[in-house]
Length: 327
Image (cartoon, rainbow, N blue to C red; front, side):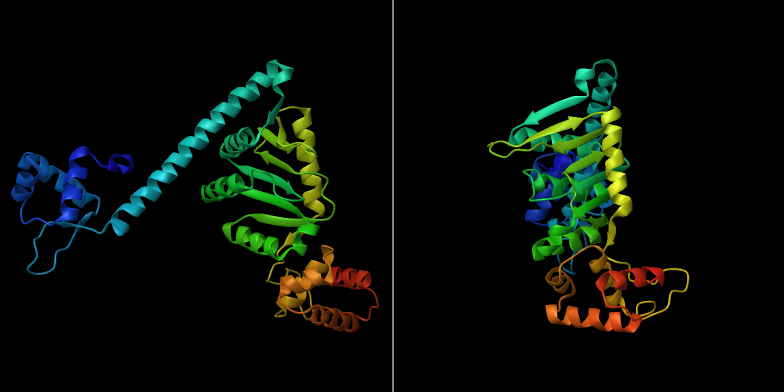
């Protein structure tokens, strides 16, 4: 059982025996296990090197092991990380092979995948293969791969892969989605918000794009996988065009360089956040949910900022805030 996390057979026997009952000497433990004392001593030495032998209280048998939660969990986490790296490398090999095949066979450029399990497996394979960056456009309700997205994205970002994602502005109206975005921000995802995103899209490096098709009226989801080609380049261009014009989320808490002055230049982070949410096109209720205040408070703050800058409309407020370096 423990061989999967780096134990030899003797190490596992010795560890489990000491876990059940500490021993006084290697000879005593060898007699209990029915194996040679030399093998037991060698296993004890390796367990000590791994930090798996515990310190016995005074008067207790000296041979005892560290508790499983403290001793085995780090080994398990390390093994999981190694397994993820292996899976990612296999996924990259698969996508490299298919990308090379697409250079010689146009039919390999596009692959249609249909069915819940097949779509999820394809998503995992493609995104685990990303070595540098994942780019995505997110709009509408989650697809069938939402759970896979969570697992793969967490592991990918933990491995140092950059994630840039643009979310449709309408998603900010949902409090649950706001909490989800906050979680992804903490994990390192770079998030922007834009209005009327035309489609769901995910691009792993420049190896493959994952493009859900319209599934209205169909029981099973369907996606198109696009491999290196002019079409993949065009999808990358669409993402970058939307990314450049999208609004960063959440707004930075530090003032921009350049000495902008005003209520948000130094300490009023909430005003900066409010202006950023306005720029992204959020409704008053969505802004209130984001800021944790009432709709009336949002409207009052907007009125106060408008009066401060001598403007009458929200468009004028955004223009003035941008011109003064507040955004």
